[in-house]
View 1 (cartoon, helix red, strand yellow):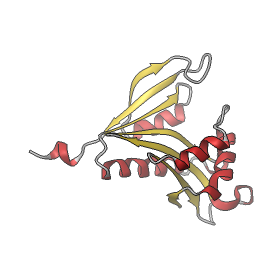
View 2 (cartoon, rainbow, N blue to C red):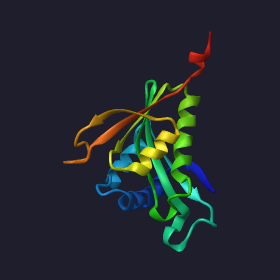
View 3 (cartoon, one colour):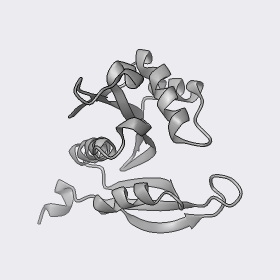
View 4 (cartoon, rainbow, N blue to C red):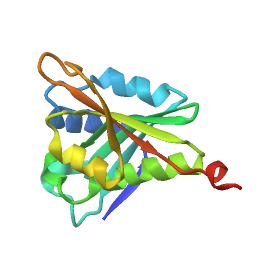
Length: 161
């Protein structure tokens, strides 16, 4: 079981460590600092309970998600889970939190980019009903395309007669 909460400046070093373990071209520590300061950005963390934590994963921080809320859109910029904590549903819980927040704020569209080669992430997003919309060639560098995925949310406004 994990608990989801807003990230604080004290979490940034651990978030950066997870980022470096998760991606071949990680964000910088300064990038995460900037995200904490932006008014439209939210950086959330997943903390594992003591049962799921181990000595390697000190501080129990298991993963994070960074998103922007701008106008009627939520854009998910980054999701990562510590390699030793994967396949426990942590990324799904982070995604569920971002989607629930979007619904509560009457957001109509959730978007993200995902590496074409990242089948695990693409499958996770499809479980939340994200759909492939377009391809961005070489988005992650030469030979690494991004797939833009979107989720359209029903809001109370669309349900009114």
